[in-house]
Length: 336
Length: 235
Image (cartoon, rainbow over all chains, first blue to last red):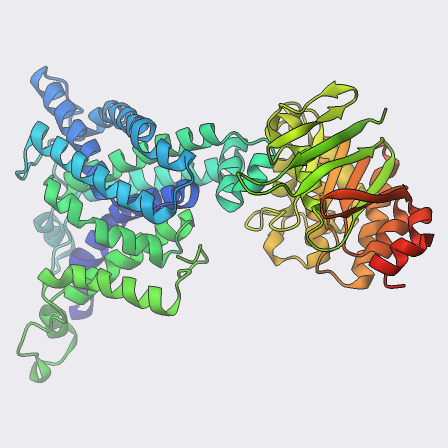
């Protein structure tokens, strides 16, 4: 019985939240890896592009709520996402046309493009703050829990409850659908394959007649979809605050690099590697040991390796270790 | 007049000095023509000029009597000119079959039949069709590179050192394949370091020195020419 309680405890506080958080990171990491693989620069505006897409999701959610449209038990934001994606893609294509294109045509070195993306980051950040402001916003509505902790306890008779938030389930489901569609697109369709070819060997792709302009456009469209959905899911599950999104860039980059930058599947798994590491290392295991150890060996402290304030230190350490010992990532990607 | 010809080409890369001077290269369908010469003679440059990878100061490129000097490399590919670069000539992160599909990118209708033809030409590729090209041997990779270039059913095939870095046995095998391709009525232009072997299978050859035509003739003539022998073929 105690053993079951211990497992439920871990599921509730580590496994389910990490799976949801990992999915959100995975979408961001695939975004980073696609831009790096095809447009060949590290996009520092990632976090803020995600917050830009989320901002539009929130604006549309408010609009739908004001005219009385809702999805019942599901959050209204799901209805708002497709409209937000359209605006996000428009914004990205606009930025590409007026900012990134110039450096790409002049064949600027990747470092220069990365610096340019920092400029884009500042501008995007400012635009988001002007439109929606810097404060913390919740835009979730509908049914909050799929399984409530109390109901679970009653059902099973255990001491520990397992709460599953509907946003967690939505996050994981949407991520799985989106990522499998993306992999199908990249591996099975002619356009997807030509994107991989362009990422693999740009000169040969040109010699094979692949049109670089089209590849760049499709890349931004996919990036817009990923950024908006990833950002909106994170905002639904936690809350929307522009600064948090900017901070999330570190775990997102860590995920992309752990997975081997330029490798979308690696980035997908990298998101979970980072999420699980962060949560496993910052969880206080006291209660867990109380269940599994005999009473005489009960731990005195919290048995927490790191305070949750240090969760970014975890992704940062993983980033440094991977770059030092395996710069091509766990799954083979390009060497940075 | 030949099927594909570059006449009096002069030019270099970017704003740099001229690398080729009034250099002329001609090739007909069903013919293998080699461009030979010492290092830095402008062999690859002459070939790249014919593909449109550098801006010519003067000279014309004609294909089937049509002036294509002002077309971009991509448009020349659409005209049926295929090029196999010396380095990085495959998509190493993709499978053999995907490499061939990318070669057929410009073909809108079904290209499955062409893939089968390529597999008939290079049986080893059929065996390794779903393997990543990066995991293949050097000789097999060159076959993938050739196969990819043949997917558009080119009328002109340009090869930049197809046997660079492969063993002598694989080299002979590759040359056999190139002869097979020639028999499908393709005009083949190649730059080679292995001059003797290349001339053996070539119908004609050009020897370039400092970007100018020095000697030209049939493969046999050049092989037996004492001046060519002493300077490039090692006596």
